[in-house]
Amino acid sequence: MTPKYTSRMSRRGFLAGTAAGAGLIALHPYSARAATNQAHLRIMETTDIHVHVYPYDYYADKPSDTVGLARTATLIDGVRAEATNTMLVDNGDFLQGNPLGDYMAYEKGMKEGDVHPVIAAMNALGVEVSTLGNHEFNYGLSFLEKSLAGAKFPVVSANVVKTEGADPTKDKTLIPPYVILKKEITDGSGEKHTINIGFIGAVPPQIMLWDRHNLEGKVKTRDIVSTMAAYIPEMKEKGADIIIALSHSGIDSADHVEGAENASVPLGRVEGIDAIMTGHQHLVFPSPTFANMKEVDIKAGTLGGKPAVMGGFWGSHMGLIDLMLERDGNQWKVLSAETEARPIYLRGEDRKVTPTVASEQYILDAVKPEHEATLA
Ligand code: MN
Ligand code: MG
Image 1 (cartoon, rainbow, N blue to C red):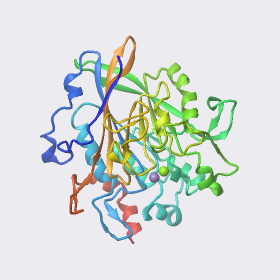
Image 2 (image 1 turned 90 degrees about the horizontal axis):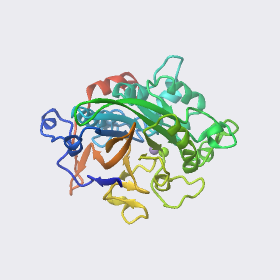
Image 3 (image 1 turned 60 degrees about the horizontal axis):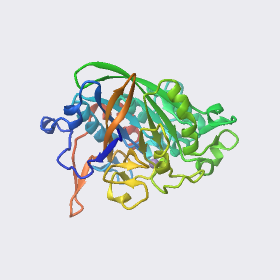
């Protein structure tokens, strides 16, 4: 069967998060419809958080309703509360981008055993896998290494390479190129199954220019699309039922241009990739921003034919890809999909900002000492 994709970009009556609102949410049709040997899996994305955990504008030194992982967390926990199968992934650019990040890099520093506050927040939130964004390299490889050491989740990136091999799969990569996570899911008749979900990551190869002084002589980069494509057969061989691309890369030309910064559209054409988490551009997909582009379908929420999402930046949106999975023999495959970027705030005609959710206190608590030290 040809997979069917639709997006919910215009559905506004669907905002979760507040205790009062949560009870009003109807079960997603996929959960209601899933038959025996079918399962509804919701993959949630945060991207380009840039150390924005508190809903706070450090430059203006005042609270802000347009940023903050503590707010996105409320959307995420709202989806989890709907009792379907869920996963949470982050798409990179978490470590740098506000005074809290600079405070950690230039003032406090990272000692052995320290957990970086944004990593602490991601741990608390239950991020299950992440990839590197280009800004992860801004403070150098040693700082990055110390920061990643505190993560309770795997971080993958296939195209940052310490030693190049004959093809990407023979490379010695800076961090693992991919991971295959075993996930227990419940099907439409309430039966539990274990599904193998592969996650592969990549970053714009341009980090070699943008962070030359940190990276030259230490690592090299490869093309996003051809590198991910090279690993797919190996991931399938190792048992991946479905494969999700963590593409810290935006939405641009449909042509595969070697070394392109924003390669998520041709990535969609790679056989074996089932869904694409995008980011880096600090934009929202699906949205009219990407109307009338080749192989970009803002109604279906697809790039190169595959379901995709881009969850804004600084926590502004939670990306959500709903997958209807079906067991085909011993393997699970994607039957249909819907994608949505769900905002933490709405902007009225008068430009006035109305938050859709409050902050999760446990996420604020995870970074409170460093947040306060940054203010001081
Ligand atoms: Mn970014
Ligand atoms: Mg970026």
